Image (cartoon, rainbow, N blue to C red; front, side):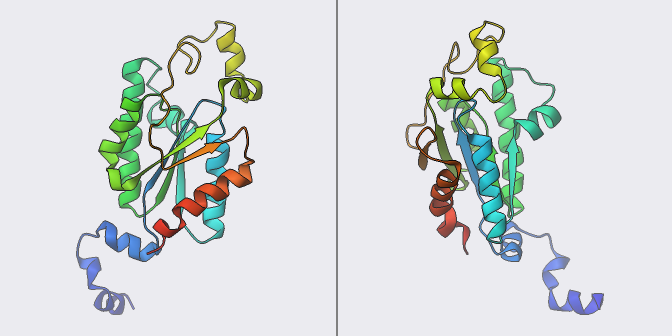
Length: 201
């Protein structure tokens, strides 16, 4: 049986290429880079989008603080230098996922234009889709899912993005999702509708 498979698929005698994996998975791969303030809804939307993609038969993977900051980047803090290194590592990992044929959903504050450009340069412009998850600071502070805003406003957290550290909004995102006006389901659908034609071979 194994010999028959090898005869039918001589490609396995060679190093596989991205195109081979894309053909196997029957999907194009790319990175959806979601940027926005903490509490804007990035992770929630990412999880909803992953479930929708799965239901439609597409393979995706989420990268966010939960599986990056507590693992491969647990040695990094929140200084300017560490933030840059954090994004550099994430971008390099994302590039590998894309090469594996996987739709990669990234959910990171990534607050500056420079940091996101760094990620785009590493991943490659054609594989980088910037999604701006936009919610006003006041709305994010009201949500305060992780209790970070309360601590930041009390002075317990320094250099908090949107308060005493800048957030630079994307200039030309592929799509902007205003989560103070849209439900999670509406947000997921808008992003899915944006990428569906790009996913299909």
